[in-house]
Image (cartoon, rainbow, N blue to C red; front, side):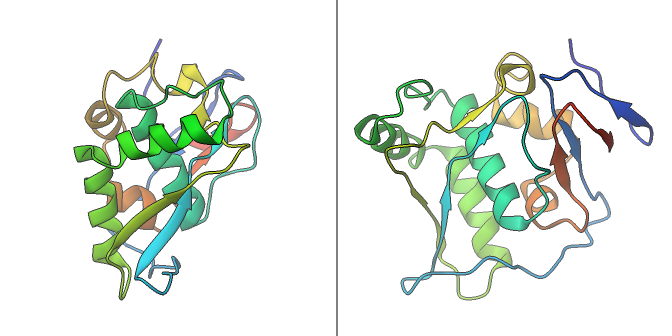
Length: 171
């Protein structure tokens, strides 16, 4: 069941996440760093039942990349934990419209950035609890629309964050 409440404190079930978004387009300067080729390097993350608050731009980038990967069904390896399978998922995801939109948003807000590159290793699974991702949203666009946010507001918005269902978050 999906509930969206704005301007109220909520305690969610333990298997869902609260997303707080700065809606006034008051963007923080980019804290993302580029490599020697001009790319911001990121990883898929793991957000299950309990995790630290997602507050930094790098963490929010990882969260939104992971959400988009799941919602574009480029997550064959959710339970596999194999670098070979994760590399395949990454390649499939990096050609999607959703990845391009995220990469372009990061490049537009980060000096000297040409886009995003995703790194994977043998331990990556890149998952978000089903009660906060694919059982709630049918697409990445729906995820953005239902949370009334843009990619830029989520990654660079002053005060944007994700909390797990064990605490309180302003929605």
